[in-house]
Length: 582
Image (tube, rainbow, N blue to C red; front, side):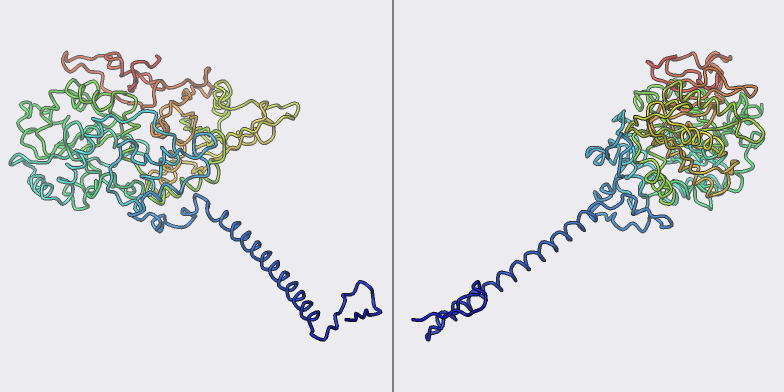
C-alpha cells in the first residue's frame, strides 16, 4: 500500500488512495459527524435562548400590578376574575405593600376576609369588590368581634330577609302606615332613617340607627337620598336596605321637623295626648334627634318612653348626631350592649366595618390612589384638616398648629435649614393631607422639599383633592369625600381636627386613636397644639343632660366609667374603655 502527500500545507489531511476506498469512507464519516456536532450545538444554543425568554416573560407576568384590575376609567364591575367557584382568587390581587411596614398582608389576613365572622357569606363579590378585598389594605383586627355580636348580626340578617322591602310582612305593615292607625299587632316593626346632613354625619347617624334597630328588634330601612346608593354597597345579603321609592311618607321627609303633627316631642308637649293613647294607636311616629331638639324630644333616651315607642310599627328618624353613647346610659339596653361590645370603644369600628363598604367606583378611587402614592412608604401619616374660621385660607395659625403637633409628638421629623444632611436614612414616610384648601398641603410639601430632614428620612406629601368648599349634594364631591375618609383610615398614624365627623369616621374605621388638634381661638394656635384621643370612638355632640328617674338635670358624662366627655368638645359624650386615661 502506497501513500501520497500533496505539496500543499503539511497540515492538510492525508488522503488515502486505497483502492477499496476505506480511507475515503472514514473521512466522509468524520465530516458528517462534524456537521452533526455543529448542528447539535446550534440546537442547544437556540433552545437555551428560548428557555431564557420564556423564563423572563413568566417572571414578568406572574406578578402583575395589583391595581391592574382597577384601571382608571374602568368600572370594577368588569373584573371577571371574581368567579364564585374561585372566590379565593379575589384575595390574590394584593397590594405591592401592605399597610403594615414593607410587607404584604399575611396569609392569615388574606384568609380572614370575613373579619373573624363579622361579615356574612352569600354576597356577590363582583358587585362589591371592597367588601372582601379591604382586608388586604388594613392591619389585622386588634380586637375580635364578640360571639354575641356575630350571632345577633346573623339573626338580624334573617329578620331583614323576612321583613325587608316588598316581602309579605312589609306589605302588610305598609297597609297600616297608609291608614295612619295601627289596626293589629305586626310581625315586623321598622326604623326608617332619613338621609340628612353632610356625609360624615350621615355615616355616623346611620350606624347609630342600626344599633338602635338591633337593640329593639326593628328592621332598618335607609332613605337613599341623592347619593347613598352611589356610595355604599348593600350590607345585608339578598334583600336591600334601601327604602323603596313608593314609600308613602317619602315625599314628607324634607318637611318633618319639631312642628310636625307626628313628632314625638310635640305629641308629648300637647296635653291632649298626655295619656299617650294616640301614641299607642299611631302607625308611625317621627323622631326628631337633630342638634336643635328640645327636652321633650330627648325623652327618647328614657326607658319609660322606649316602652311606649316599642308598640309603634313605624319609627321615622331624622338626626345629625352619633347618639350611641346615650344608649349605653339606658338601663334597658345596658346588659345587651355589654354582651355585644365587651370593649366599649369598638362600637363604631365594628359597625362601620360591617355596614359601610365603598361601591366599586369609589373603591377604584381608593385603591388607585393608595397604590400610586401610599403603598411603598414605610409609614403612612394622615392629617385631616377642618377649619371653622371664616375668610380665605390657608391660615398661618392653623399651619403652625399642625406643624407643632406633628413635631412635638414625633409624628414627622424636623428639617435642617442650615446644612445638608449627608447620611440618608432608608426610611420613607408618606403624608396624606385632606382639606378643602390646597394651601396647607403646599406649605408642608415645600418644607420637606426645600430642606432635608435631620433624621435623613424621606418625606413625601400628598393631597387627593381640594374642593375649596363643602358640596354636600354633589355626587362626585361625595365620592371623593368618602374615598378620602377611607384613605385616612388606612394610615398608620392619624391627626384629626376638633368637631369633625369626617375625622371621626376615619379614626373609627381604621381602629386608630388619633392626635386631635384643639380648636383655635382668636386665630391663635393653641398650646399644646393637640392631644391623644382616649378612644377611637366618635363624639356625640348634643347629648341630653337629664336623669330620667329623678326627672332633673344631671351631668351624663359622670354617671358611668365608660361614658365620658369628649376631648374636643367639653359637653359632648364618647365611649371609652374603663382603663382609658382621662
